[in-house]
Amino acid sequence: MNIKKIAFLTFILILFFIPIIIGANLFGDNILFPDGHNINAGILTSPLNRNNDITLTDIPMDLYKTDESFTISWTPSDSCTFYYSPAPGGTDINNYTSSGSNGTGTGSIEICADDIGIGVGVYYCVIHNETEEWTSIEFQLMIESSNGVSMNTPASGAAIDDPTPIFSWDPNPGVPYYLLVLSDNPFTLEYDEEDNLVVSGLNPVWAIITPENSVVYGTQDPSGSFFYSAPPLVPGIEYNWIVMNNYGNNPLLTSDVASTPFGFTFETLNPIGTPELISPENTTPGDTTIFYGDDYITFEWTVVEEAMTYHIFLSEIRIEEGSEVQYPVWDQVTTNNLIDFNASAILIDARYVWKVIASDEDGISACSDVFEFRYHIPIGTFKIWVHNPDGIGIGFANVVIDPVEGSGDNIPLAVGASGYEYKILPVGTYVITASKDGYETNDTLVTLYEDPYPDPDNHDGDISVPIELEYSLCFFYSSVVGTNGLLIANCAITAEKDDGEIRTTTTRSGNYNIAVIPGMWTISADKKGYSLQSTIESYIGLNQNINLDNLVLILNEKNVKGYVKNTSDIPLSCVTVTATKDDITQTKSTSSNGLYQFIGLELGEWSVYAQKDGYYSPDPTIVQITSAS
Image (cartoon, rainbow, N blue to C red; front, side, top):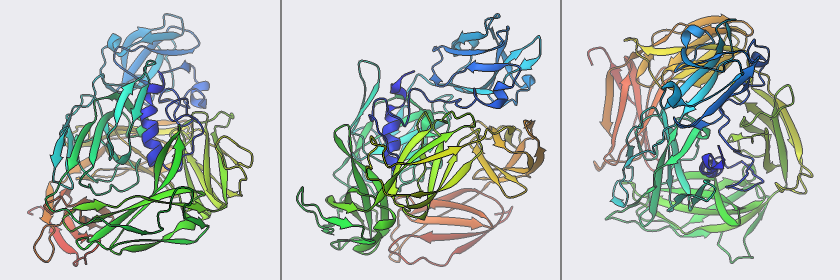
């Protein structure tokens, strides 16, 4: 598998995960995502594999179509059989299905999904020796669809008048998640002569991973992969959107099998005035306004008579492959026409551009021009290396950098395939935390000093930060079902240790496994519209793999809906409506006609609260839900 699988994702993730610093080509041999998806990274070097009776030496690391071959190798080279299951099996061979394929004593199998009669989906697999009753450590196999997503609305070429349109597409059999990306600029997807995917013109302004096949514009990404709020749609811009198959609620597990992007425009019969930027003023090239470590920068623009709110966006300018690319670093909604920005806590030594979008009470918006300025502050470079106890880099580990004294930029980044990543920040002291599925989370306190050569290609002056992650050697696995016994997909699983430590994961089809450490744990499941029947408590010892009882969720059949209007009885769109009960919170955003709806609230007293910038919020509405409601 080559770079075509990850070039598109690289571009999206670099723009949304803004702290990532790469020192190689954007669509070439970059250090962020190398060839393949590295799905089973860490399994081959894990003590659970190396100390097993069957030691895996080669396993699938990528996405494979049903007719694409993959190889599995092991030692000793006895005749073993490949087993698979749609759910974690905990290496109990009774939980798997035999493929009938074995290595006939060679210690290796090369097969494809068509050979064993399985289709698109995610499978949990082992190698088993029937004679000795030996079973390997479990690994995953992801079979991808050969079909791109069939997109529906907004239709290609459509002119829409809804500021919060619904994006919809047809379900793709076997695909558990979808990645949707919206660009405020037309873009194309093409394959070059080496079958690499080349993306041109993409400027993503909103992205989301969802198990659904429709989503309202502006919905916050439930996977937590993309952080920035969606800007209002603006007339006169051609927007392009695309949906791609995703196999793990993670951008790294997105297929490059894609349809053609759809383009649409937003139109309105009642346009509003355009804000004009005042300060920092736009200067001629070579004479840019420069701020020398100013604690605060005041952004100011003209008042738009019809505007209720203003949304300011700030982006860093970088050069990638000879082209300027804008990386969003900060945004804020205000009702004023100026705002004081805490620059020293966020900005580095770089060029920046800013713009303002004005919006009226109906969600109709207009965008300003783009102004540029320069910020200068002492900065340093972290050279982060995440590795295992054997000194082998852990590819694609997540890293969070929290300031003690320094930048407030705390958005996660992903290390490269070799475990390395670089991060430029203002000098200061930071807590750096690394994590990866199958490993124990670890953190370190590091002081960042000024780097005389803050360049990704020059590592003189870098502050090295090695972080070692121990292997997770204990796992719980089970399923989440309804009262009818059927699996419930896309649930959040939480394991809480008796000392307060918390581990989380999500289910795909309703099955899960979760890495923990020895001790007593309480396991629970959560999904909107359901209530948990009861938690499960269990003790787990070192190297144990425990199959728990099913977690049971009860479907809540009570729905609450309403409309939000202003004092003139005009419906308000994009209002945040929150419903709370004890420690349960659900949040919705109103549609263009002011409608909100909460699906599946459990019995009890709920407090419903509405909030929108530019408006005073009424007192919360108390809703008492009973079995007779």
